[in-house]
Image (cartoon, rainbow, N blue to C red; front, side, top):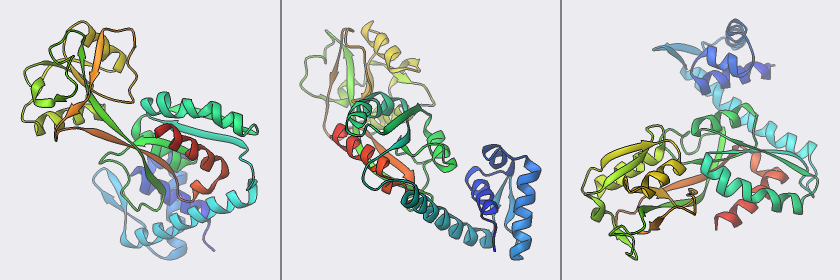
Amino acid sequence: MIDLRRLRVLRAVAHYGTITAAAQAMHFTTSAASQQIRQLGRELDITLLEPHGRKVRLTPAGQKLLAHADAIEARWEQAEIDLRTSRDEPAGLLRLCGIPTAVAMLLAPIAGPLRDRHPRLSLRIQEVEQQHGFDLLFDGAVDLAVLEATPDNPPAGDARFDTRPLVDDVFDLVVPLGHRLAAEQAVVLAEAADEDWVLPSVECTCRQHTLAACGAAGFTPKVAHNALEWSAIAHLIAHGLGVALVPRLAYLPSHLPITRRPLAGRHTPSRKLLTCTRAGGRDHPAVAAALAELATVAA
């Protein structure tokens, strides 16, 4: 009989890419995690890992075992749901996480309705960076995440996660009041080609959306300023220091003398926000209730 704890170590190594990172996530020592992998390989008489640069990767036999391990984990998730929760009423602690915009505009607004409809349910909401959301799901530290679709996400069909579209967050052009484009009903992006631009930091995916949209519109934006927070970007715009593409769900201070102008034409960027659970996790009554509320808010 395979020790399921060793399968979980194998899954963690595959997820994090190194035995050291997997051990840290599971609160093991590196030597203890290595011993678990070696023992699992001896029990099955196969080699599970091979060097890959500074990391390790699963051998073909390890990949086959991983597929079974992911399926077992999903079935165990479903078993816990069936055995530990009431099918009639969401109850207990529901752990949610999301990128900053998702926390502010999607997760926070569903908290009140969820508490009102399900008084036995309590919520814990955590703001996270994009990739950390998948790590928390994988580790079992959160039940539901609202994240952005990016090329670095786990691929479609990944057996560990259930990821589905929630909302397309369209970008608007934000300009100061009194700007030549402020009175336009809708703006063709190429009309802003000669403007100074305020861009998000390099770490923010919205920077890449902006650069890609401007490139598709036929120009490279003249980046005058960079900022980390949407509030800082809004203040820079309000002082006439540039324009920016801002997702519609991003909160901008309402007192500032700025205006959002929708984009017209083919070059209208958007980012896709997703709901993400572990495989099998959507059937949890509390998660299902949160998903229903999210769908209402997103609409």
